[in-house]
Amino acid sequence: MIDEPDNAPVKLETRAAVLVAAVFLLIAASVGYLLYARGVFERTQTVVLLADDSEGVVVGMDVTFSGFALGRVSRIELGPDGNARIVVLVPHKDAHWLRTSSVFTMERGLVGGTRIRAYSGILTDPPLPDGAERTVLRGDATAEIPRLMNAARELLANLQTMTAPDSPLNTGLAHVGGAAAQLRGPHGALGLLMGNEADARKLITTLDRTNALLARLDGLAARADTQVFGEQGVMPAAQATVLQLNGLLSDARASLKKADAVLLEAQAIANNTREGTADLAALRGEVESSLRKVERLVNEINRKWPFARDTEIRLP
Amino acid sequence: MSTANALRSWQPALRRGWQSTVRNLNTSALLLTLILSPSSYRRGPRAVIAHHVYLGTAPMLPWFTLLVALASLVLIHIVVVTAASYGLSQYALETVIRVLVLELIPLVSALFVAVNVTLPGGVALSRQRAMAQRGSPAMAAPLLAEAMARVLAGMFAVITLAVVSCVVSLVLTYLVVHGLAPAAFGAYTRKVGQVFNPAVTLIFVLKTLFFSLAVSLVPILGGLHPAPMRAGRAELPEVQGLVRMFFLILLIEIVSLVGNYY
Image (cartoon, rainbow over all chains, first blue to last red; front, side, top):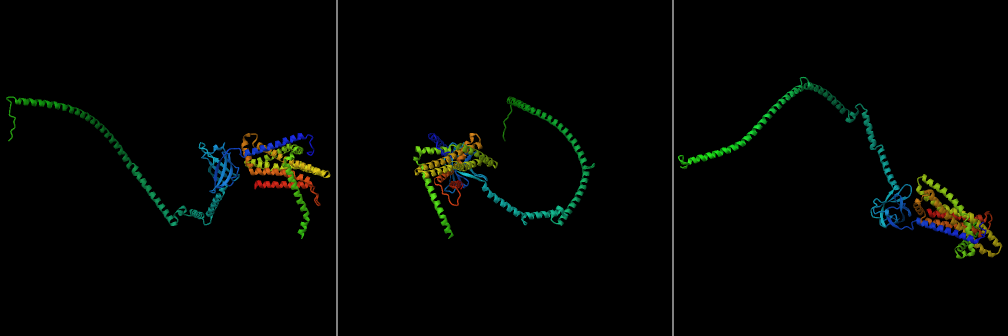
């Protein structure tokens, strides 16, 4: 059918041109979409992640933050110190999620590829500068397997040592078996504790004598009970004594009350005496002044005639 | 002695094969030069090219796209459901894109164009060549122009079908996985960008180009230079061309797989 020449070649040419143009447009759009998908039109900044092993990291893989793709690995190179340098391109519009305190982890699960994740704990910290280098923390599930295998091997070796015929555990169990046999023996736990029959017998004899002693102590205690708490015992006498003491104490209390009253009276007397003493001082002053007056009067009379006399004292 | 005899008996066949290969390579180079020459797109030849390009692509584009869309829907659904049942949903999208867009669609487009356009075109060209041989030798130049137009039409058809089908498949994949919600467009675009890294994209483009060349050139070359019927071989020349074309397609596919995954 396609070999038949069209009757309207111009029309066909137009259609062909439209078709070709449409296909080229579609191809151009597809190329543009792929370039957009590859992030060619995005303004980016770089973050260099340093890892001791970049196994599993491929160019183009995502770096996620809270499950969202934040950037992509653009280059992996070996640094001068032997560490892998994973260069990550982060679009400017998402770069604010990365802070100077951000932590980067690289996890490798048992199923699936390696994943690089970013964590920003403090979003108020300064933003991560362009070209910043950060060490990536590795969490490798497959790397745990050899360690796990080593631990399991050590555990198995220990178990083997423990379960060997001459192992301490087996010896211990044999001893436990012997002890159990001794427990089941005629002397039971005593034989196990003492170790030999003679000592066990000694202990039993000791126990018997202790029992006899206890029986005697029992009788002694009964007699003491009678003597102490019996009708003629110490306790009733002590009780009577206590009663008498109570009476004595009551008497003493009454005497003391009386003495208290006497003391009160004596206190009153003392007060009166103190007051009287105060009056006595005044009285004494008055008497002294009267006596001085009388003395002055007598002296005056003595100086007067006919009562004048010689008062001069002559020394021998 | 027996080895020398065997070589002597294969010698004419080897010589014929060599001569045929050289001749085909020459003609291919000539045709590609004509395709790349601006003079081929002057008013006269342009009508022939437009005729073949339009009629070689437009009639089958809608129903091929429909067919690919249906097959893609089934395949996408199978991959997504299987991945989900194994708890590997995050890998479903990448698998679908790789399997459908990168591998299946270019191959199916090439085979479809070969069966519908270029193989019949080769037969028609062979008939035209026979008529020209019976007529005047002046018809040789229009025959070459016709061959060039058919090759171009075949290449254009393969590329068009592949591009349209890839776009349809990508859209369908998005719709099957995320539904009509536009919110996942960013993540989906990112995933597409991850799959189409520069190496994979280059291999995809080269593979589609070489597929289009293989399905366009081989039948047309068979029409221009039909292989003579050989004694003891019952195949028709068209069948020989078909086998050669399938062999080339297989080779391109293997090389692309090696390039993509090793």
